[in-house]
Length: 156
Image (cartoon, rainbow, N blue to C red; front, side, top):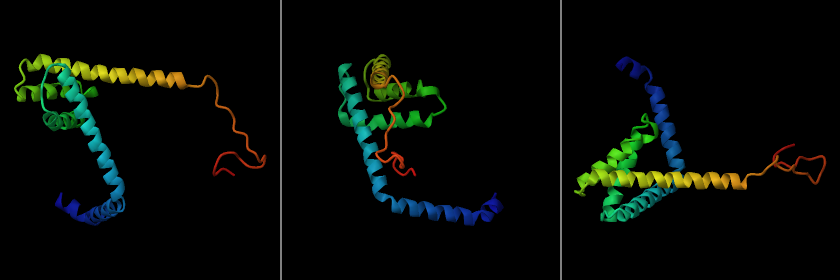
């Protein structure tokens, strides 16, 4: 193994150098992406907090903000499990038990069902909007004002 790594050392160093240059040249884009991810975590935690409150579970937002990314990461790490079934559910149950919520198993099941129902709801809304805004025929042809030129930008 050592011989193989030594043989390919220059390739590894070139990859490291290129990755460092790319990351340094895209700092602003990386910061914007990180901000969007962070905002998504805050929104997901807010949604979970509201659903927990609807179920009568009174956890502070900071507690939900602490466990929501952990459960999401665990689901992502278990990518080999179809749709993360059971992984996310077990994570929520473990977190509720860890916070000492009475009847955590049943409450976690109700919480997961609400979250899954929310996903189904937005899927139905998305497909409904998709089909409602779909055209019934082929798109209209774009007529170029100059018969010798194409109406598409960048086309000859």
